[in-house]
Image 1 (cartoon, helix red, strand yellow):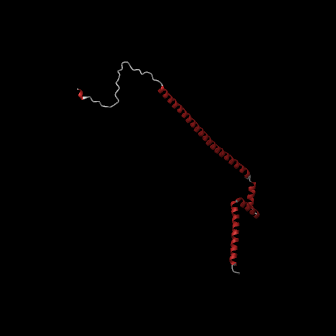
Image 2 (tube, one colour):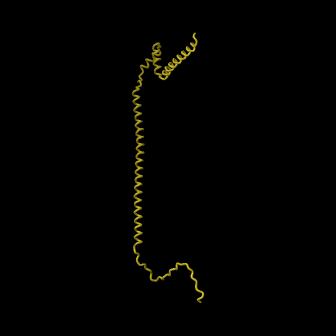
Image 3 (cartoon, one colour):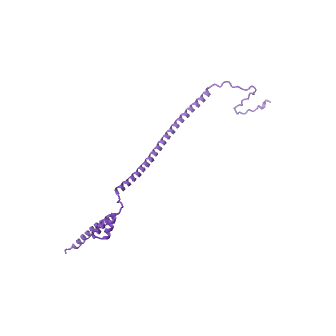
Length: 173
């Protein structure tokens, strides 16, 4: 044996073993996930073996009055149900969006009305102030006429606004 041949052969055997294991695992997984295929394979192998009990069961299954599943019809039924659900959800989403849109429009209109009312109120207040100012000016400019006093009223002396104290002269007497 040449040197290093043992290790090379061992590595090749391990690699081949890994590849064959991966292939076998893949086929076993497919068989375990697809039980119909394994049943059909068992049916074919038993039919070839000629077991009379299995042949009898197969003939009974063929004679049974059950209808086979129509997968296309089932698929269409489920598709129709999904379509109805999708349409209902689409309609609900549309109503939500439409409701929010109408709320936004109503809010915008309300804000516009408030702004117009404030402007109108401001104009009315301005006109009222101008009118009041005009009334005061017209009242102060107008002559008042003669002030009438009652006949029996005594004339009041007007107090002297100067606060000087006046003393009597002592030498005069």
